[in-house]
Image (cartoon, rainbow, N blue to C red; front, side):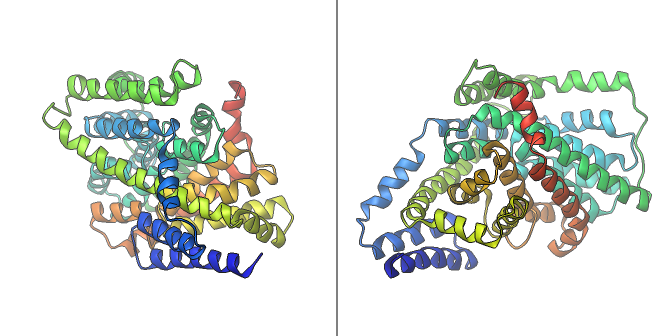
Length: 432
């Protein structure tokens, strides 16, 4: 490699890292570092605009605004309490019952919102005070809430899965959706084991005894919300709709359910919720556009090949390389948001993962879970800050209570990494 290319790589990566450390918005950091790299190499600056437009000119990405809108509508439409009651009917009878309810409710709610931040903000404001009132420590309650919110990123439909599928190229969104169910359940089970041990040690209370009658009552009440997931997943998997079409239909369904069934929204309040959608969508699309320029620079400078050589130079053992990939993603998750990690790291790390036998679908689940853990870690963990704000606790205290859950989440991550069938069983069983 020539000195010019080496200098361009250093300029691109170092300027980006400096701006991240200085807390520049990620979209600005990505765009400015790419602009400096292009200018240094004497390339026309029109390349920046061309690559940004190319980044968002994708039919698959049309599903993203619909999934975001669906999540906002259902999250504000009165379903949170319904799903909490259903989860309570399922697992509230166990030791540490409300912690278990918290975890199971996140599994249900994640399938609707697809967002860890939305899960924490919506369910956390109900769950944390409820747990504290029943005798649970506030820091433990907060740690359970933010940890379980990561399930929502694995359980379909998730707009981050769509972003990954688009970035990776040629990966079925339906297969990714199906692949998330078992890993999401494994994560939930791991968190429940951790919660049970802590609850037993601290003598947290049990809930009411299990009742079949109550379970079916709550299931009947919640079926309208859960059906939104069926519309998307079954529609895409069965080939009735594309991901974009199913997301659009789910938005209409969510609107009807939120206004006329659960009555959590009115036609007047709907506009405020749509403003939230626009805010979120604008951030996501700007990140996708600017990250495409960054990816163009990385590819032009052969950074993926250099990264592959560097990682495989450490070891040729597939297990060691898999662990290194997870460590890289975890570190990135500590300093960056999820969308830019997916957009920037996928072209570099996915070829390395596939070279050691990791299926692209399995890698997508690993990537999403790593990013989810990153959302709970300082210094940039967005969900960690949301949980701390809701509970009115210092971040340091929440991180300390979070340590056992970090351990359980890492165990779940390692299982998903080294047992491919956890992610691939359902897609393969259904012919993907």
